[in-house]
Image 1: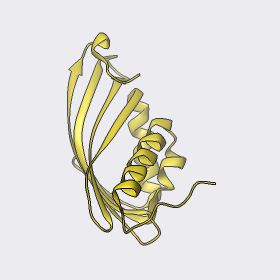
Image 2: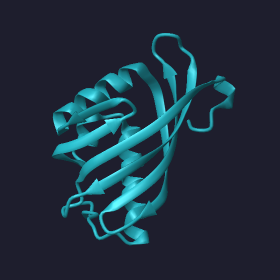
Image 3: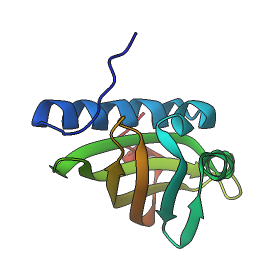
Image 4: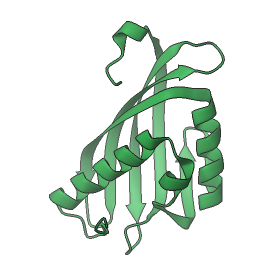
Length: 137
């Protein structure tokens, strides 16, 4: 059984929280990923704003139907008592065109006392790459 990682964060627990998030997202399992968020979690993902765990699952299903062969890296940027900021980079293949893409961005996370994410704010940019330029497999 995995130990719950909850605030206040130390360097060790913030790094563990980021690694757990990276592993969950790389599973590409919306049900698994959604368990890390509060029932009423508030999200901003680029230009989309939504609330709730069910909306998270819907978003992730749409995302991974379009972003095939998704592979993600997250890196701890900063942390405080109940907040963590990360930079991330991921690669994916567009379902419609087959074009490989790399996405760079930042996320700011806020957690409740149980370690569930109650707020996620994400900004990102995409650009096309060639398959032989991939870093993450």
